[in-house]
Image (spheres, rainbow, N blue to C red):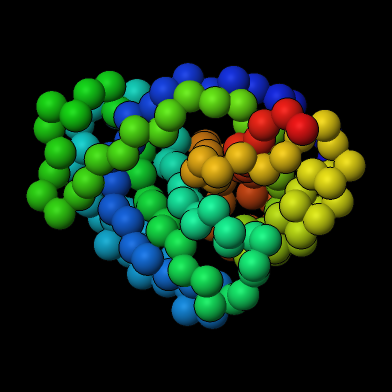
Length: 158
């Protein structure tokens, strides 16, 4: 699987966040608190959902399932003029990304093992310390093997 390399323009996101680890994975809880209220965000730029992760700089070099990270459930907005109660904002800075078009179960982590363990080490890029995210568009279907999404991995040239 070969990614396309893109420069992402800055994005404004509104959503909810939760600190978790792979050992204490709370993604279902996060989306259950966000999904029923996402229609309250009234200045969306698209219908896509954004599942964003902010890892500590040493998350992958000193990997343990108990390493904590911040996970966001969000949508892209035009402005931060109106933010619903109990939701927060984050600016996704512009930068270089490897974008993988993934089709399959969202619970199958082998795609991330391939990206980080096979593709990245043999590429012309290193992992950059910026948010990772998935774009869950019209073809995304939770827990469905025919689901499609984009996986955005922050990179920098070696």
